[in-house]
View 1 (tube, helix red, strand yellow):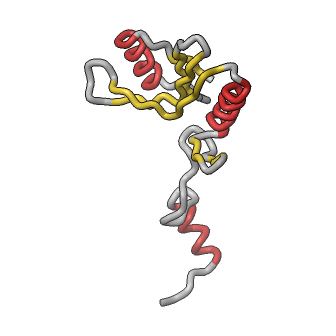
View 2 (spheres, rainbow, N blue to C red):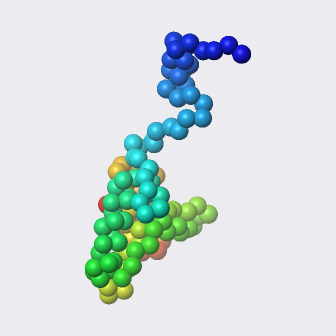
View 3 (cartoon, rainbow, N blue to C red):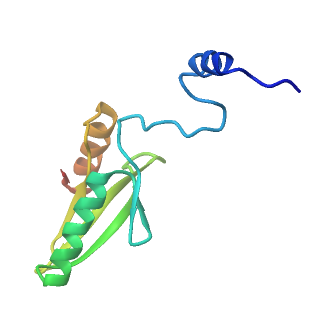
Length: 124
């Protein structure tokens, strides 16, 4: 087996979009996956929102916060994953999704959930 030169390696990685087989690709929308207290988050925005909700929960401003709630889209077999469900002190439920970029696909899913279940998903 022969060794590859530095120049050959550069040519190889340029042909594969800057990656060598097996390397992790960068995220499609530029988010950085991260962890906090052994929980994984899709983005720093999502992690920071969760931290804020947990502080509100500890301070008694909200009853609870739940992450990554999955529900079936009305009239479909497909599902949507909503980042947070927050239970207010008075028992009302509020739904939040941490988005850096609003896509047409996500807006359509959001509207389907609103029209089918009466759930308003707020963006963070």
